[in-house]
Amino acid sequence: MGFGKTPLKDLSRSVRGRRVLVTGGASGMGRATAWLFAREGAIVALTDIDAEGAEEVARGIRDEGHDARAWMLDAGDRDSIHATVPKIARALGGLDVIVNNAGISAKVPFDDLDYDANWDRNIAVTLTGQQAVIRAAIPFLTESDAPRIVNIASTEALGASAGFSAYSAAKAGVIGLTRSFAVELGRRGITVNCLCPGPILTGMTDHLSEEDRTTFARRRTALRRYGDPMEVAHITLSLALPAASYITGAVIPVDGGLSTRHA
Ligand code: NAD
Image 1 (cartoon, rainbow, N blue to C red):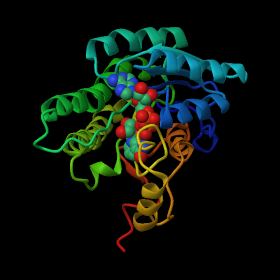
Image 2 (cartoon, rainbow, N blue to C red; image 1 turned 180 degrees about the horizontal axis):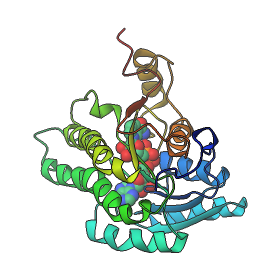
Image 3 (cartoon, rainbow, N blue to C red; image 1 turned 60 degrees about the vertical axis):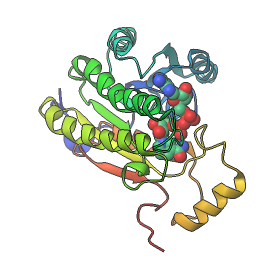
């Protein structure tokens, strides 16, 4: 547990050999994260409700000579999480890093007929799902010499857009979950941090027209552009390093300056 006898200056700045579980790995940020960790030498368990998509990504990673295996995991099904995470941990010989990335998003205003169903699904997949993955992984993370959890929230947890109350509430819940588990799990040496991505080009945003995306990014972000999923993956990887040993409970926007820019 913790970093044991390794002098702080020698803590690794590599994820080589780290056993990493990524949820929602079949697309977007999860896919970029799985690729990045695998390229850096990690052993990646790529999970998704889209089993075929996850397998395709894992195969692509293996074809380049890296280590990735796919599992079907529905982040909205607590029982399946508690059954599957231990199986993954045993297959990998343990777990060092959890990336809670799976998520859904839809514009559903307060008076929409689907409001309640969308609310329940967002809370189940995004909030209860992250909580269940973490709780199922704790026994294995406790055995790691540098256990790391990175939860993906959103800038929608810091501000809000009309019609996204379920998404926004679930993502704000992720911030609370991150802080609370950071405090509770600190004594086990487990760090728990959270990223708030801004506008990123993924499956979640590809329904928007190029023009809408460009206009939004120019008006709202400091960098005047959408982000690439890999730009989020790089920050996730940084927080997962053994050397990232004294950052926990942090809520970090990865948003091209959206949450900073006023005018
Ligand atoms: P994406 O749609 O490209 O990928 C989401 C992945 O999650 C898909 O592979 C999908 O199959 C999977 N998934 C959906 N429901 C699932 C479930 N029940 N169980 C397991 N997997 C499930 O979108 P993305 O943008 O890469 O999303 C990744 C995360 O980033 C999400 O949590 C999302 O809310 C968050 N996020 C995205 C943006 C953005 O602009 N794209 C901004 C802020 C936060």
